[in-house]
Image (cartoon, rainbow, N blue to C red; front, side, top):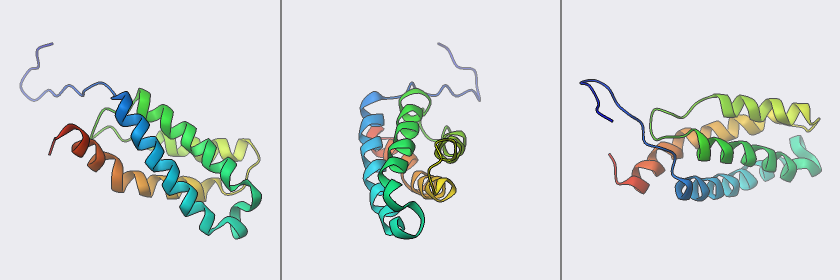
Length: 116
């Protein structure tokens, strides 16, 4: 595919990157949400982590195509899905997830692909 001046074609998602990043995300969220386990999540904190991890994994595998493609939609979906399943702490979990993603996903992609 030929690009015109000023056009940029995002690469396809990279399954190996998505898997590695999903694991890092899950590890971080388990640690972060366990800090508030008693106050917010109670016995459901691992279930909340599972919901968020599933949504993040799907996004990374199907939609994330490098810097400039990190969307807010997966994090809204996290909060909504946690609420729909009558689990506690949807907004808190989504906030922790988006903060981590903003700090890591694009940087990790650049390291993975050797981009700047």
